[in-house]
Length: 409
Image (cartoon, rainbow, N blue to C red):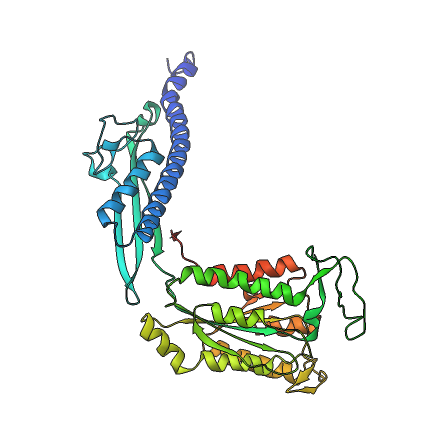
């Protein structure tokens, strides 16, 4: 009998069949687990964002329990479960396949909401949603002795009733003659105008058609795009302070830091392009004013916070003057104004001031100085078109003012 091999295949197939079936079952269940977990994460993310957004929109009228109910309703809607599948739910009694039982603590979602006071009266919220579900294995996988698995996903969203960081921002803007040069955008409001360029600047030229919008007009529009989100984020003018200073061959009288954006806006709208370029003293003025003790004191009295400080530094050229005198680059390729400007940039960074730099249609030397001055590569931009300048200033406004609920995990 030991030598008789008849029926070996049938015996081996009988022994291997449970393992083959179990392996097939595991493959099917692994795919199901991945799909289910992705769906659970999406549901948890939606629930956390919904509660965080509702809290920031109704800081005085929405209780923590009501916010939790909103999150649970989103879980229910995203997961396709009935009201009784989640704690605190009301309504029908169906329990969907694979859905957590209301009596099983291991599969009940949990929602935690914490609130902290920001400044004197505003609030910041953190919503943590833990979504749980038990997935039943198919009969083939159960041949291995495991009948189910508990899945869990976590989502965390944060929001605040106001911009969480108080802001002090100084605009350092080039108003030299090249800012009167035309851009690539036509001015459809006029049929003719003097289209200034580097080739005809200072000459007696005639109006030509079509008319192009100049750099200065583009800058004024760009600054408005920057200031708009700041004003919207701080309607009561207790978090945002903005100042502005401009320069050509030398520094012009500044608009001191003040609550809100109106004064800085008016200052920029009145700028006129003319003269050479020396950014050093204008940049120094911004650093000096931002680092005054009285600037921190102003925020402490109004909102109880220490402000994040910014400089937005823009040029379309390269430094040709230093304190009113024409200068040329030295052996290192930098002029006196270049070196002084970079020295003040270093001072600003040491003081914790973040520096955005924008080289608008600028020559290489101007780009090099602004790239070195910026807080990092991410803070340096070199737009070559008018629409790009508008986009850059808009991004800075959005980045520095953001008031929104956001997922952090």
